[in-house]
Amino acid sequence: HPATAVDRTDGGVIELGEVAPGSTPDPRPGQIRRVDIRRYGLAVIAVCCLLAVTGSARPEPRSLPLLWRITVQGDDQVVLTPDALFRLTLGDRPTVTSHDPATGRIRWSHRLPYQASWMSTDIDGLLLLPGPDPSADQPRISTLALDARTGAVRWRHLGEANPAGRDAVLLGQWQPETGTVDSMQLVRPADGRVLWTLAPTEISAWATLGPVTRPTRLVTVTTAGRMEVRRFADGTLITAATVPWRVRTPAEDEVAYLYGQVDLVYAVRTDKGEQEIDAYRVDTLTRLWRVRTGAGSSLFDCRPVLCIGVQDAGVDGRDPRTGRVIWHAEGWEYAWPLADGRLVAQSRTGERLSLIDPDTGRVVVDLGRAMTVLEPEPGRVMTIALARSVGAGWKLTELEPSGELVLRGSLGRVGDLGCQAAAGRVACAAAGGELTVRDLR
Image (cartoon, rainbow, N blue to C red; front, side):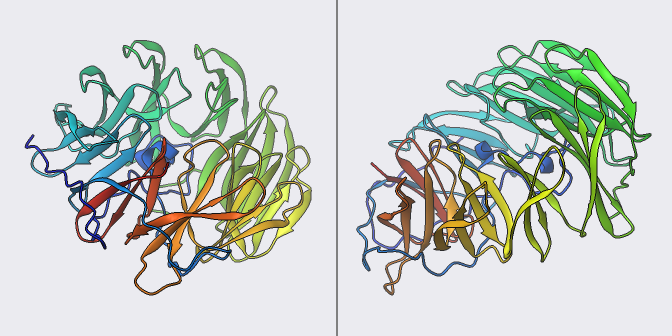
């Protein structure tokens, strides 16, 4: 792979390059495909129309020190971690490259055997790269696992990867013709050893339960509505039941998926233009409640409540045990929890952010018209938006625990895909073909 020139001079306004997203959000979680994997390690940020962040920021923020910058291609994918910046380049020579995050120096570069669909750094020390396997007899997805430190091949398996905690990778073969997964297996990240296999089968959807870092249960449902709960560590069947289920075909613009939260699993399906949600206890698969919501509803964990966002109707915070509405927040469409329990809510238009109370849905801090930077450390909230002063470019603001918005500095120009931060550094991209890494410390 040819070396890439690294420019460490700060030349004022920088025309940055776009970084292609690692995956496309899909309203059908529970199916092993790249569009279903929406982890922070993939570093994908939605396109927003941004104006200005409210608060007491200075009109002309200081420019954050530029550490280095490189030219990237329009479809490159980039992930910033505390230890490296990884760049996936597609085209005639698909390649993944590791850069020193402080200097931009190339540490290693690995030529890939196929056009990787995306890359994941969710498991420490490992870089996962799924993509269509040209060596298979029929269209299949294969996952290549590289050592993140050296670029050496750790293992390669058929199946598309879904990182499952710190100690396991769940692989599955998605069949686009039937909309099912025909086999699943759990492998050990360190060496690719297969821990258990579930095949053959026709899994329509699946979900994991338990701590994010160490799942304890795997719940699957087949096209016939057979729901099974298995012990995640070894695949042992715990309980099973037949539940109402609607098989979703690939040609339909409707959803059917499973969503897990603590010790409950929710089956979501479309029926007569509305979504029906059934809540089950995972230990017995006893149904606790059922609600019908508007079309386009989405479930997300707002701890301690279950949030259901309904298109054009706001967000309901419901009691997970009873389904009862505890609070309703008008004007919001999505929210996600921070490590300290607070929620960041995004408006339906995607232009406005607020910090809300998970117990009441009340707005605690208005973050203004801004875009979030991926949470650099547990509990930290950073946003980027256009500076008030003309020509100042974009600014980065951090929310202090006290609720005060503190200006961190200017970023120059930033593109639609925004920024990602890790270990005191921030990487930003913009139209023009350049990626910049700046010092946040």
